Length: 306
Ligand code: MN
Ligand code: MN
Image (cartoon, rainbow, N blue to C red; front, side, top):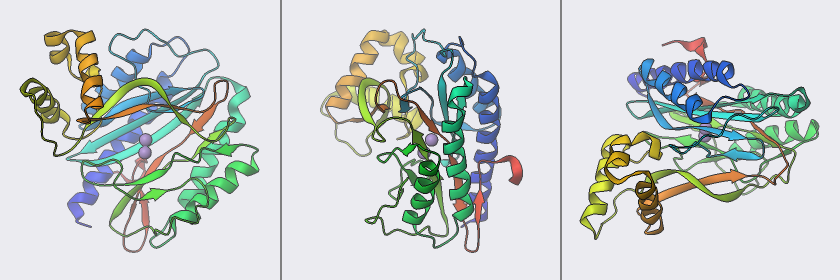
């Protein structure tokens, strides 16, 4: 892997790590989700990175893909299990990392299960190791603490301006996954532990979208809107909060409706909130690792400042 690319991954990772540490301090009961994500996304830019996707704040049984709407008033609940998932890119090279903050002692074991699963998985990661074996380590660790893994969420390879680049790191021993970790590739490893069913479903709620690459549009105004979005974020995930100029032009309601319509027409990919069963709790930790020819490097930690 090109040395300048390695340096960009390490820079993105270092920024992501600082933002994550800040998230730990900012997650408190009563804090507005909107204020939390704005603080963290602004901090990414302040540190010299760009958000690779909207900061996700998924609460309790929500596992992923929740980011507040531009006019949302909801706050962090008392006793919540709060996942903060942060993506930072430097020239398209992405660091993807997440933590869980449990605001009540009663969820400590769940959070520890996910944290330990990631720690064990990372100690196992090296060039040539099977993705399925990493999954087996995660599953064994989470189960030994009395919880389930979320089976239909997984880690993934990363590529330039691409968050899910095709390869999967399962959170269980998947006999159908034959891939091995390849030198020169970055992977996000992200175990989820749950008190629920271990399978997440899509909610109606959608606040994250991405432009589908290379589409032909039939309608000029739609094409212009997609162009304005692509100019800012390319094909990376985005949210309505990031386009105050389009909100000013169309009004929030109409902009939101347009995004819905464009995703129905298949011009946008939508990322609905993914949740386990109501009343359950989900914890997640995630780090990005870079596989080099002879070793693996965790990029989302401050220990390898470029
Ligand atoms: Mn993530
Ligand atoms: Mn990820």
